[in-house]
Length: 474
Image: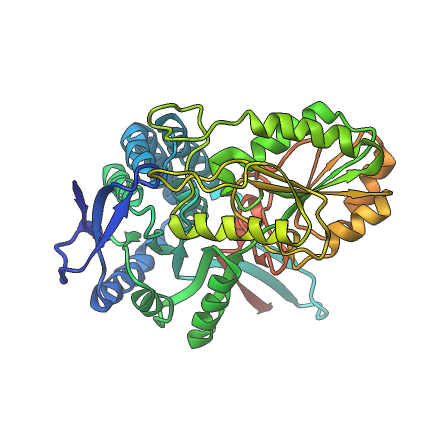
């Protein structure tokens, strides 16, 4: 069984405490490793190391920082298999999917390295004739990065690559469910020759995370997580008025118009709902179907979702894998049972499997209502509720009648319908005739309770900068 130590100032340190965090394979419930739980003093040491390193890192030219990021991306690709092995063991993903996640992480790292010559300020006209206004983009300083369990390798680089190219240094807290892969990334940091202290990675409990996030040197906290976790981060930000960047809950609506390619829509939606057992922030979570094609589309969904087998992906990569833990499994099953009690019809799935592993079958619910919990709260699992609507105005009203606004989906061949939804949907993203995939040159940002700020693209990179206005009299 592997034991991982925290990575501070370029080194894996000897732990100051005997406290360990156990890591389990969610497909077998067997322990696959353990990681040192950072103490408050170690957390402080990591922030101080990042703050000290930022002084010289921020003074490098952006093209010099880009060279470090490219070397880092090379190291990630070199170590993709070892990162993938760690991730597969702790997450229940197949080895192929886990290794590919490391390669995608290398891709987004290279993408952000390309901002080196594109981080631009502005020259602004002054009201005074003998005066110029210059707006500079500058690093914020130390960034605390809080990483989720579902795509922990990709999301880690999605956050630290733009932070680093902008001149910041980082302290990373991976999820305690999937921390081992983060330390494989730390080995890639070492391999790449990244200066000590620029990237620090520690596992910790909530109390120690508060020590990191409320340290006076931390200027930005970026989180991908739940709404409740976002509220906690906002409380952390109060201590030093740190900037928050939060991707929180999602409840992606998919609107299926009568003129849609129903076969393609059903295939894509079932894939969205069963990839990584539905544990994606932008996975389709509610389906609105035009009433004239409702029964036909429901039959398609039922046939396709019933055909998805689940089990240990280490044995059969084609299976849908497990949920993250037993709590998630129990909570999702309870939501399904409450929906059925409230009038939903169970088309398929909806039972707790026997045996080891945190599995849940792909589940389809029909006859749902807009006011049901299963429609109003995030499921984050392989459960698909379906509703019918009369016209696009009603579909839009129901899609927008929600606390979340992360992603949305529309299937139609009508450009008028497309433009109407594109101009009225209350979400940060709209995907036409496809399901969400978060292109890293776009901007992944939520409306309403789905978050503040965002990731990816130019605007995601600029999240990690602050401005300085220089007023020059001449």
